[in-house]
Length: 161
Image (cartoon, rainbow, N blue to C red):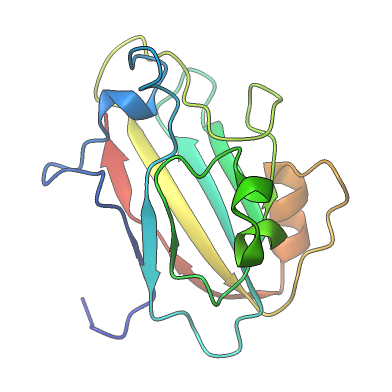
């Protein structure tokens, strides 16, 4: 991997590529449904915004959308653990982010209850040459349609749970 390659990483994903239970419905109490921390590097020149789509690519309804984010300022270098649902609370550059609906039809991070382990989760970060105007209800479908012709780069790590 080139050191200047646009890339996305998470300290939550272990050396085997697994996503811990607390990020899923299987976590316990307050330690479940927590969005993982993310960091990105080498955002392409000319990027005006970033967008993120996270999917369970092995779900029964393939793929299952777990998280959608639009209009992430390129000045940010990542998202802290537990970011989902705290856009307004964190404010600043974070306050510009639009958190879209997952396949539970609610905004935010939501991994479905997994019938078995070994599911792969695709985190796809898009570098875009413009802000996306998606209205109040952001969905994966609206986002993917809007970004056509605006993608400067993609960063895609995959984790397994």
